[in-house]
Amino acid sequence: MKLDTDKMQAAKEGGIGWVTFNNPERRNAMSLEMWQAAQVIFDDYARDPEVRVVVMKGAGDKAFVSGADISQFAERRNNAEAAAEYNRISSAGAQAMIKLEKPLIAMIRGFCMGGGLAIAMRADLRIASEDSQFGIPAAKLGIAYAHESVRALVSLVGPAYAKQILFTGRQLKAAEALRIGLVNEVVPVDALESTVRDYAATMSVNAPLSMKASKLTVNMVVSGERDQAMLDRLAKECFDSADYKEGRTAFMEKRKPAFTGR
Image (cartoon, rainbow, N blue to C red; front, side, top):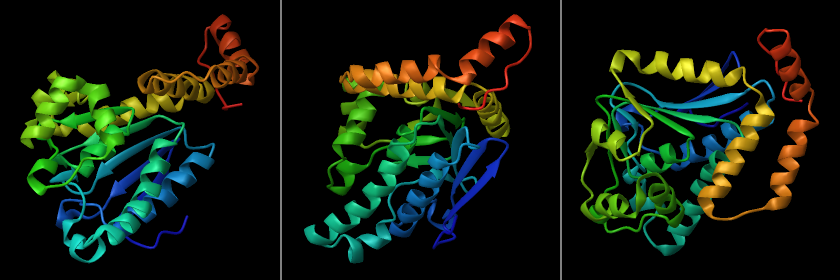
């Protein structure tokens, strides 16, 4: 995998694909180059059968992702035409995250703001440290938060809290984010990585086809759409798989299954 910037880092380790937003001097704010690299990383992880689960994290201890790199706005988003091109490139990176059919975990420490929160909401699980802070400052910048991101926010916290977050633009501490359902779990700073690794390790040995079916089905429920042909295909893939036979056999033999994703 070749990346054109060192602001994004990728590493594969024991069935886990790690993605690091590496722009700590700007609190890991997302530049256009980082979005382009993100697409390359996620496309690679999607294709690699050895990668069972993906974890996203921010470099350093100040931020997961603090949002878009506003320093690029004057040049890259200075009018509607330029903004459209910027959005085309960043959307391609975002779509690569969204289309990932494997479990995706966001390991959040520090600031998780605006576009950074949109990235975190694309994950299936959000595990945050106690010093994390969340918010969407769109109302303070005079911009519209994307429909897809608003839908993700509403699906997590409901319309009332979504409007409160969007209208006020204020920052939420980790405890409040947990209370309203924005994150799955909040842990002490020194337990963040070990907690995420435990989740990822558990998922990495589970049946890939089963997790894929669960993820796509939950996403379908949230979207309000129902593709019965896809649901039938996912079920057939699982029941016809060698992993289903392995799961049954391992259960009867009272041993841990060794799933292959086939």
